[in-house]
Image (cartoon, rainbow over all chains, first blue to last red; front, side, top):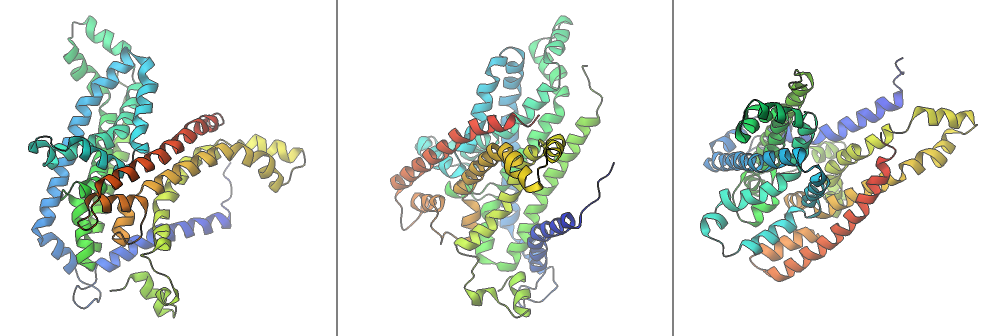
Length: 262
Length: 161
């Protein structure tokens, strides 16, 4: 039986839609204004951004940082979560609790602490975004990566898969790479896209540690050029949105994919 | 340079900036924070509201309860732990937000995270030890919030099955 949609519900839905879409629409209109005259419509702001060499540099840097963060997080967490599910299930609540810590210690506190702890460490780590910043981002990404991997491992029968692989003579690396990994691929991808969205949008740590990542570049444009700021914000929104869309597609693939190992 | 909504409202004859409004103040930050707080609230509270069973509503009206009485004596008491834990979570989220406030006001509204940022990396007002002290104070507040949140979410998850 389908319930009738009440007029009040429609009204609230409309209010919500206006509330959330108005800023987006306004940003889009704003980004189309001409930089000199302030009149609609011109793609000049987008051109200004795309022709700025800093834009490509910052975007590439943030993208490489995301890939590095994703790689390190996966290398650290896939074997850990696998081992915890296989041999140490009692540790699961402990790790879940640890994964809450990045929420209790927000980026502003984390960056102050990390800068203090690592002050005086070698320059190849401390002065390089690919060292220090990635280390911080692995901490930020930990809960998201952990909870997606955890749900992925919960959905497969780790014990049976491992025993089957071992009784056929597989070594631990073979088991992990050729049996376990293909089965948790969707969960690992979901964690990777979440991490991508986090790193591409992280501002606090990057600005306080004085690295020029993409969000820091957006803020710089925001302070200096009004109309191109709207254009670059929309591009950033597009990147996050694409990552989330990919996440939804991966999640759907997981729901319909034939369950291997059952 | 003026914003789109300000422009529309001005064309309608009411410029909010002539009436004491400014986006770059505490009020402005509150409006902008709602954009990430409302979705978080929906994510946190939706499972709890889903957990209110239709049968409870029916049982209440069979016993003669009005809609108001149902919410007063059944709905709200069940939702209270979820609502409280959501309040704690949203408090922590707002309390710790740095990027939004900084991006919006450039640091002209002295929130705790903004102040930490200024003292830690500021050129004029550099005082890293004060920043560290503020960060520790913030951590104590957030740890207390978590200490409230975790037991509350455990109670509220009882009804969400």
